[in-house]
Image (cartoon, rainbow, N blue to C red; front, side, top):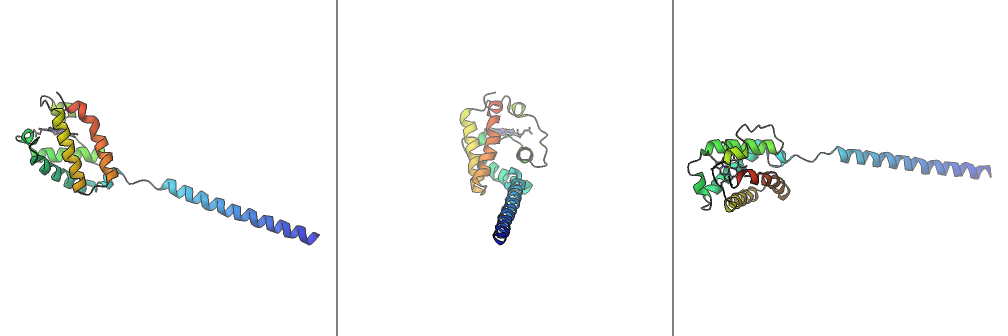
Length: 155
Ligand code: HEM
């Protein structure tokens, strides 16, 4: 009788300690998962170097696009490239600081049309694909640029 109850309490202790170990392990897992920060868009784009490569390739694509290349015929391309790299760097969480005019001021008086906006965004999206930016990062970056349309088009 006595022997059986000792056995029972030893068993229940074993069950308890197994549960305790499982709880600690699960707790540890949950904690480490929540501590795992997703890589920033900036790092997914390859930082300063990756963004510079994308912007450079984009401006080449724009220069070959008869729908909009005329708009950039008199543009200062070196200045535009630096401005875009800083703007995208800042938007994606990098240390860059865009110091140029806001998008309304920068495009005021250009009378940019919907069709030109669409062509610009299509060239940008194609460039991201050509430069092997992941689909998730492509979408994230497009989603950051899309709201600028109302400041850029039709003024
Ligand atoms: C999300 C879309 C766009 C972004 C983020 C953007 C960004 C910029 C930036 C940062 C500048 C330089 C401003 C400065 O430093 O003075 C600029 C200038 C300019 N943008 Fe845009 N832009 C966009 C769309 C467009 C579109 C759709 C067009 C025409 C099709 C366009 C045509 C120009 C031109 C012609 C300049 C002046 C370049 C110069 O004179 O040197 N942009 N843009």
